[in-house]
Amino acid sequence: MKKVAKLSLFLLSLLLTTGCGNTKSNFSKKNKEKHSSSTLILGFSQIGAESAWRKRNTESIQQAAAKANIQLVFNDAQQKQANQIKAIRSFIVYRVDVIAFVPIVETGWDNVLKDAKEAKIPVIVVDRKIKVKDESLYAGYIGEDAMQEGTKAANFLLEKFKESEDPHINILEIRGTENSSVASERSLGFTNTIKENPRFSIIYSESGDFLRSRGREIVSNIISDNQGLNINGSPIDIIYSHNDAMTLGVLETLASNNIPSENELTIVSIDGEQKAINALKDGRINCVVECNPNIGPLLMYLVKTIANRNTIPKESYIEESVFTENDDLSTIPPRGY
Ligand code: AHR
Image (cartoon, rainbow, N blue to C red; front, side, top):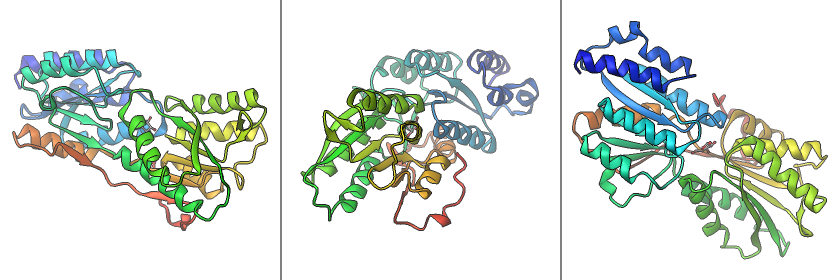
């Protein structure tokens, strides 16, 4: 990369990394001088910092980029698709080698990705999927299998309730961000599987936007509208929450209303944050389906592969497991998020 382009990138980094001390240092003058002209430059747009999971996801990408000697131009989109589109356009103008982004929602990417394709900059979609008319607009997706995560959550419940004689097993579902692929797939994988047992029904479902505050709020509203943890007189037996942040908010509300989550209520969550694992150990959560945020090393491998003009798989999934009340939880190593 020519000197002049590098200087432009330095300016771009100043524009895009406001408020992100760690990443700014990637583009400090000192570091810039250290990079050789062959250093790969990755423009990466993250959706924000809505959960401990997301913060770990960012860290994993930053650490892996540093280790792989890939220069990262990081953008925090503050939960706005418009900011992501703007960042991707800047990456194109400044001719980074590869673009990667976590799409906050599934649709609305066609035009900006057409521009990237015309500029011959390959794009990797990270953590959430996109729907585009022309699949050649991006090279590949890397992240979790959210459909499987929903399926795993449902399988735990099918097994747990297989002996139950209760004719109505009522579920409250707290969904992630509307129109995001993870929320749609976690719902779909779950509902497709849970219908194996017709006694299960989702009696209420609402989006909590993956936020702890919304988990708190949704359950508070149910309790105050229905004077207890029920919907129009039907008791809630199960809470299926699409992420740990919302689940932790739910637990706070239950505790402040003196509603014990142990015994009567079954709670299934997704992510595997340390605090959720602690709650699983205490019996306040029954199952945590892991969503693995440690995508960085595999992403950097794909970045290098594609920058060397080799193709990458259209879909690469990261390994994930499930933690349940039936496991020996003492062996789980510290989660790091
Ligand atoms: O896209 C992954 C989801 O986004 C994680 O489950 C959640 O914690 C995050 O906010």
